[in-house]
Each structure stands twice: as C-alpha cells, then as structure tokens.
Length: 73
Image (cartoon, rainbow, N blue to C red; front, side, top):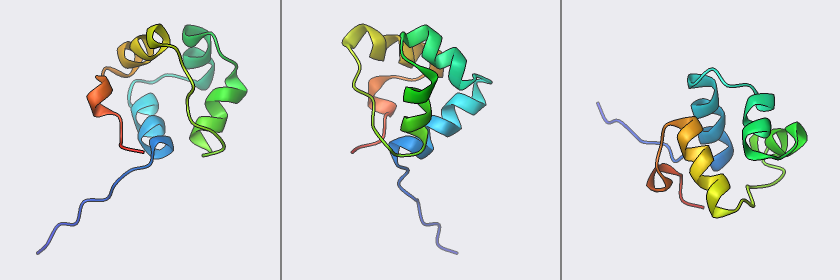
C-alpha cells in the first residue's frame, strides 16, 4: 500500500502544533505581542505571520519546533 504524504499549509501545521501543545489563540497572541485576531487569521489562511526574529524564536519555543520545521510557502 502506498502512503502519500500531504504537504500541510502553514495554517494547518500551526493549528496542529498549537493544539498539540494545548495552547489557545490567546496564549500565543499574548506571548508574541499580537492580537488573538491575528492568530485566528493565520489559522484561517487570511494572512501569514509577519513577525520579528525574536517573535519567531518565541513561536518556536511555544510550539517546540525549529524554523526548519515550518512548512515551505
């Protein structure tokens, strides 16, 4: 049986990672200094993160990942 890998969008990947860490949108927003609406927009594919390097580092800590783990655009 062939196993086909599916490329996740950033939105899908982010939602999976956030939920796996039991983080709310509010948790992520507060840690990154953005609004809950911004985080919601990422998950609904309305926008993608436009973060500073320190914010991306913090996001990696929150999601227990590295920048290399992020899906390709």
